[in-house]
Image 1 (cartoon, rainbow, N blue to C red):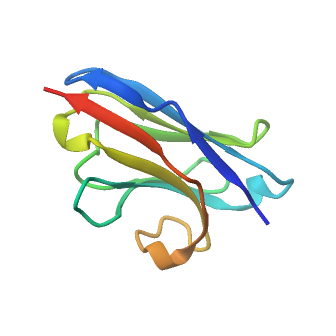
Image 2: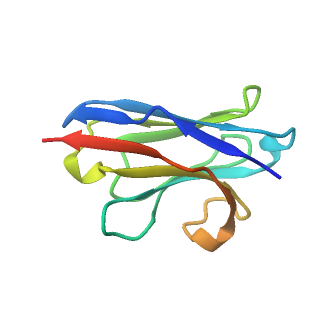
Length: 123
């Protein structure tokens, strides 16, 4: 059973940057696609970005395209989300998850989830 632990969240001013990390347990990390989702207060969980098992293919929600970058380091069992040009509407709890289907935007196609890390962007 995989365990995922997010870190790197915090409070930042609009226009600033943060880098989230998601550390995974287990020796099969490099075999799976990974994704990031977020949930803003009072809203549903939404897809943010995903990456293939190798890191060679990436997928983004339109709302973050050009500002966020997902990457992974399989030697460190870690996936990252570099967030630049942050906006107040990016405020949310960010979750990483292990994917069953590469690049999927569907929650049901992710089988393990972390507990999340809070990102707050002030205006």
